[in-house]
Length: 121
Image 1 (spheres, rainbow, N blue to C red):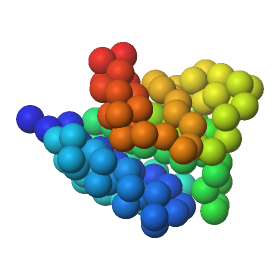
Image 2: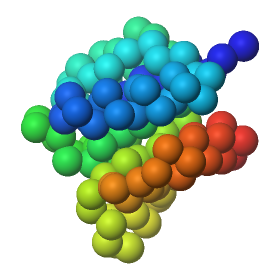
Image 3: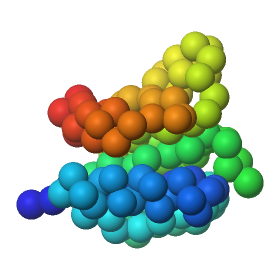
Image 4: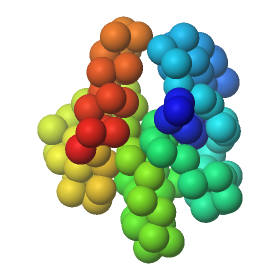
């Protein structure tokens, strides 16, 4: 059965790129969110297997979304996808519960590999 994925990014263009890449790789996209609050609500409602999470959202940081997901007991795997590639931010994301972290721009192969690694982690 296809893994269910929630895509969180403030850019419609980036949500579309990620959605097309993951749909093509056989994943089921169950939701698209453009901000942290919507992402949290959708994660609670949909219980996706994986969440792709941008770090810079209009209403909060992806790092803060991670804290809320953990507090809510959401056990979805999280792959952070961000243009912010500083080691300190990446390690903070992992510390707060992200299973993987990829930096924009990325290839479809890098994205699919990151999702698959997160699922297995």
